[in-house]
Length: 385
Image (cartoon, rainbow, N blue to C red):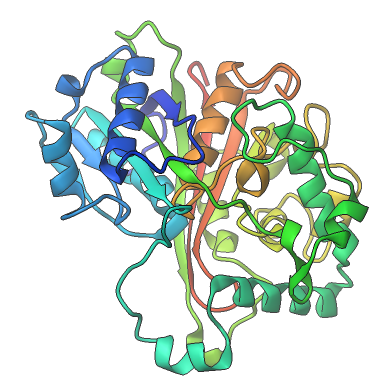
């Protein structure tokens, strides 16, 4: 069964806070949820499906449902997929709606990464990898960047061009954590933190969160707010395979084609892309794996200004992305989805709104490029797509 056209994103809300020392994670979830349902023209009393990852406090989705007072809940999904979790949740919500399990699903994410590191249980691979410096994730992404440079001649200047594009966009976002426009020279002058990655190759660390509301076509037809149609969804896992892993390839190489096939479109049809940007190398590899350019050509694509809105070959992350705007709970999938919704509604900042934006792709990664990861990709279209 295809979920194409079986669900719509009717509401979206990004928490405006980036430093939130005085409120709890549960309250951030609640404020994001209230914003999203209000944007859809609904209320929490209408919600009958809840989707959230382990960023939810306490007993996860169960505790959050209690905190939000969701009395009519019929479906609960706490799938955990790191930064890709919200994209998994949107796809799972669409499937649940198509099966009649719920009709108005709330997807939330929140965290306080500036207040304390996002923790979690120890992992089975830790005793084998931590001792060699494979943690934190920065080391894994640096390893992937080094290999990409070796294989394809990618340069630090090309990586820096990704950050520059994000900074150009962030100037237009009053809530962006970093609003200063950078040059390639600025990025290369920032401290080297894990060769070849500089500090400005890394995402910001922010508190905050966001939420979207996914509804059935029948509900969408009753709402005054413009909705966004879910056209395709793909997900994939790529693990270390006992060390036999190509660190220049992400799981988006499998998830992306699946989402595009379901949507019945090609990469050339996409007007705007939200690409996971925890580090600049992640954007380069996703450009290639999603089919926007050939393998090894992601660096030149970025260096040629292809990512800059509104008129680049593929405008990306027009809110400033995780590199400059917001990376709440060290997880960027929700903000990527929200900005795609804005673009398709024609509600992005006028300075970065893509003219005639009809199709958007959202790609998120949960995990490490050089080890194990989960990837989810959404293809979204205007309500009449």
